[in-house]
Amino acid sequence: MHRRAYAFDVAAVADVRVTLEHPGFVGIHVLDPDALTRDICGGGVVRHVRVETLDDVSAFVHEVDQTLTHWGFDAAALRVLAGRAGARGLDRVVPIGEALAFDVVWDGFGLVDDFVRRVRVRA
Image (cartoon, rainbow, N blue to C red; front, top):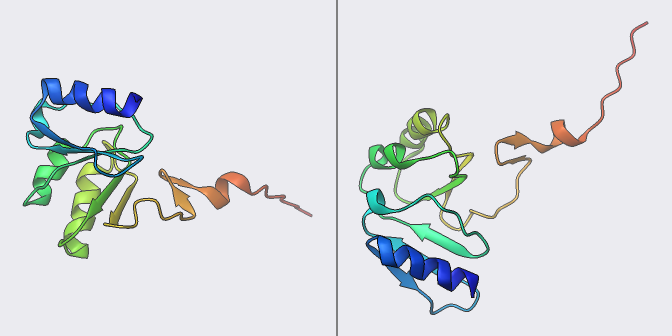
């Protein structure tokens, strides 16, 4: 219920289309990204916007944005985007379908470095 209420609140103030046809998933297709608030609902709510250039994405990225999924952009262009937008947000840039694929680097942190205790011996 919380996800649906959130989606309808967003639809009341921004130009979006809300998708409810899949159980457990609420999609919010953003038609005007400038009118969208940065509130986060989580729990199966995905906001998505179609852009023609990666410059449009780097201008929109904010510190609360973690994962960007993409399709149709080459690796060099995605590296440039990561360089521009990475300091303001975006921990991951992955192809569509891999947004939840687990990796040793998660949310910008190297999990092995964070969870492994290292003992140093100096003689």
